[in-house]
Length: 399
Image 1: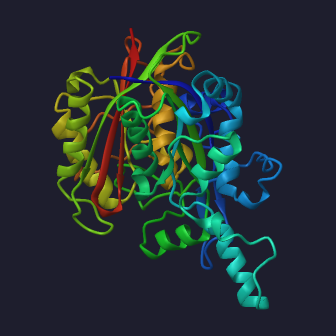
Image 2 (image 1 turned 90 degrees about the vertical axis):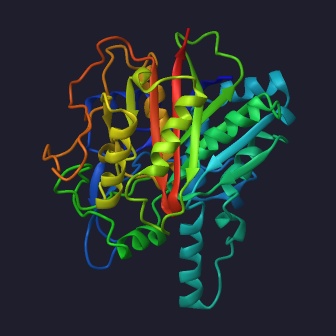
Image 3 (image 1 turned 180 degrees about the vertical axis):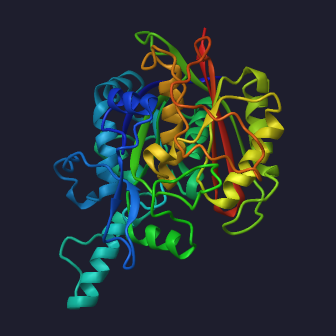
């Protein structure tokens, strides 16, 4: 059974609303990727930063203040009228909230601990609840006055893709009638330094699948969907999550299984759940982190599942790798690709230096200016994470 994705709120390095993001996405705009100092002691890094002003916390919810929640609120404000209409229609107890995150409010907690180390006391406004993984979902639920299922998923870089698949299952099982689902992650000293210690970050803009790739650019953002069992009758196109595939190969704590067997299984399971063949997929949004191991594994997996080829791109050179929010953000890019926001039928371009790695399995990377020959109907999004977590989602335009 399809789950209709009726509304989308979106903020990332590409822009602070769906129209702006769509324009930047299809034009391959990398201007949101900026070199910054202050995150690491020894060097500057290229990061995908949100530069627009973020909303203040709603009255009475000041204790929930974190940049993560502000990003999520910025996305939610864009579709707030539609959210409140859904609540009025089905009841607050029949609306669920499922959010993926990896940072939550840990950056604010780290700043508070630093002040404690320096002065011997935590700030007066410090709240441990800011840094709990459940904080984003709880914040949304409390702000909207909801009493349906509310939880966060944190499985590293598959977190918010899993949130969408979990929302799909809640609707399938009749647990609720509408779900707010997606993800949010903010730039955070803990994660940036952690990835640096793994020698996984690039000082320059990342180059997915290039022989010159040197690692990821971390980014921040939020994507929030309103999902239900019924299409939006006012939308020009009805777009649905048709199915997903989740696997866990548990090969290594941080390195992917080198042959991409878990990734292949996730893609094939998603195709089966959506009742589609590989040839039906018009576009594949790659996980494409620009690390040595991920790109090698993913190219093998994509070639195995799509031996005839499929138009694909990694969009992380445009937005940065938003970690726990990446799955939802790249699902949003697929949604935009299929929607009325793409009237010229552009393929999200693969921005890189154009230097293929001869050691990688060849895949069909979309050059800037590529268009679909006919309007795209089906798109797949890949998300892979530490610990061998793999997830693929398929979205489609419904007749």
